Length: 117
Image (cartoon, rainbow, N blue to C red; front, top):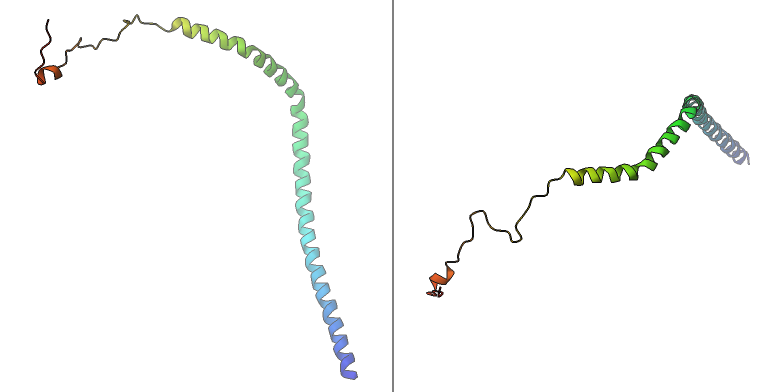
């Protein structure tokens, strides 16, 4: 019976030691996470301060962009008219003629055919 009590006490001590080690490890991890979150919160505060400075100017930028976006179809139409007016349209013959002039086929001569005329 004494042996059973001793083994039970040793098992409880081992369980408590394991739990203590686990809790110390989890505590270390949570400390690291807390430090990282604190650094992130500082970065978020800086970003928020920068955004607060930019905010009033964005209203002006959005109004200007809206004006430009509204004028784009008109500007596009003007650009098309300018290109159409500046592009030369050469006068071309109805039927394209090679630069060397019309050539007659020699295939008929090869087979002995001679057209009249």
